Image 1 (spheres, one colour):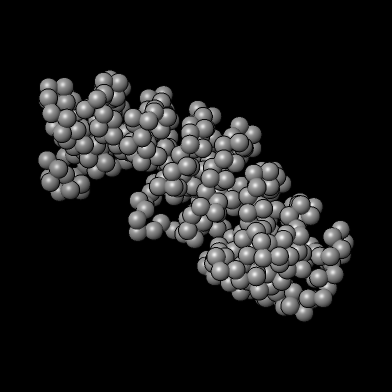
Image 2 (cartoon, rainbow, N blue to C red; image 1 turned 90 degrees about the vertical axis):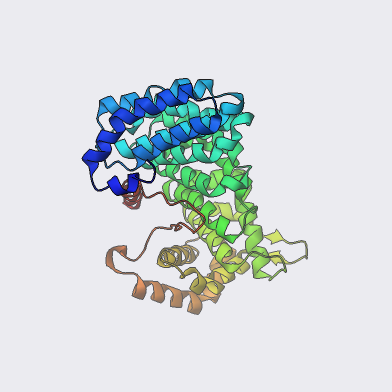
Amino acid sequence: MDALLPQCEDVPSLLHSIVEPTAPALYQLVNECDEVESRSSCLDLLANLICVQTGGSLTNEILNTIVAPLSSIWDNAIDQNLLLKRSVLTILTCIASLVGPESCSVLYPLALPMIDDSIAREENMFLSKSALKIWWVFLRLSKTYDPLLGKLFVRAGELSKDLEHMVILMRVTEHYIILGGANFLNDHATTIQRVISNIVGEVRPRGTAYMFLVIEALLRSFPVEGGSLLQSSGVLKTFTEACASNYFEDDKCEPDRVIVLYLTALARVLLSAPETLQTLLPLTLASGAVFGEEELISLYLLKFQVAGNGAHGMLFQKLWALLLLSFYPRCQLASCCNTVIRKSNAIFNIFIYVLKNANPNDTNVLSYEVGYDEEEETVEIGADIYEALLQEQRT
């Protein structure tokens, strides 16, 4: 039957007619089979039947028939039958994708405890990937923040210790911040802090790019509160130390593409809370070199062209230009004022560059994003909702 499904995709009525009698029959087989592999195959076939449906092609009656036995299967999946839980999560993911944003929340009372159970219990940790996928799908389909879905985020702190799940966890955290706004930040600031602290400095440059999705979402929505959160967790200090190491070209310093992200985060924080700079600088490295305001400003000038790389380059360059402008009088930091005045020729060239290259209405000042890589499962569902949320943030 699996082999026949692709041939039926262009005939929704045929697919519909297959599912209606097949779903109860597959569940009966699940109950009657003794072998775990056979039971799992039945559930996987049911998931495939749902996944090839087109939107709205299954009636509520059929969907209820499919959903009703899942709770019992989950509860009874113990010992050698634990693998059946993965199939249950896959079926629920397919159903959520099928019913879309208008109806997927109906699945929350059933699915959310399963996701929580998959992450919280050690014997279920093999389900983490499947649990994260359905969690991510629910978020992508959400048009508004639901505190019931928000409660799951408490599990993110523990998950962030395992860098294997870092990519999708960063996407999940970013989406929560954009979707949940102040309510989410108030409820989960400690967990956000824990997640970021577990990731920063522990991943390769590609991993840092994903981590910065969270940093950017946080500082774009809450520049003051987000900056305070990052400072109290020591993240801003880590960023500053990495910048200092790069400036003095230490052997183990982070590459420029990482430093550009750190400098952009610092720019967002300092534009909203300039007094933060005095808590970060001057910084003395193990080598004895001192990294102060002058070195920081010099680093912005040195890396300005590098910051322009990528679709979001103009956004970064504009933020850097605004920060440099903020250091001119009436800036309260005398050492910054003196430095920017001495380096005015280079800084004015930056202002001119931004003014010449930024389109009217900032149409080429694009939000930061990270494309899916070849090892990451692409989730296109809910892309329009995500774009709408980003647009809301921009305005």
